[in-house]
Image (cartoon, rainbow, N blue to C red):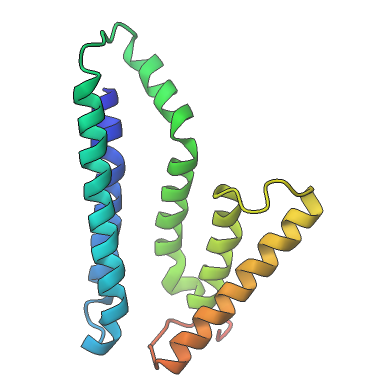
Length: 162
């Protein structure tokens, strides 16, 4: 069971989400697909590297006996991978609300939730951490919006027009 989760689930999920992203931008002009194509290639390469690394590790540790019940193994796996699971869930949520909320709002919300998951400003107090996360998310969102505007990307606007 652990082999299935560690070796297959995370890379497979990344590849499925990458495929959905690629499908989502497939109608864009070729010039607008250059940067996303590099990002997609990088994600695929990293997913393959994770798969190979985890498979080698699992095969090396194959001599262990797995006498624990499946429910205990699943609970241990969720505990070990909880941050990655939350991040994948945030990516799926971002993909789902991207067109509805618009590029800028969806990115701002995604970054505001993903930065703390990644450990950004972990050593700060709650107020300072919130200020750092929101201001960083805002600055990144504004920068990405400016780049999209300069490169003349067609980005979805939300119901509020931004």
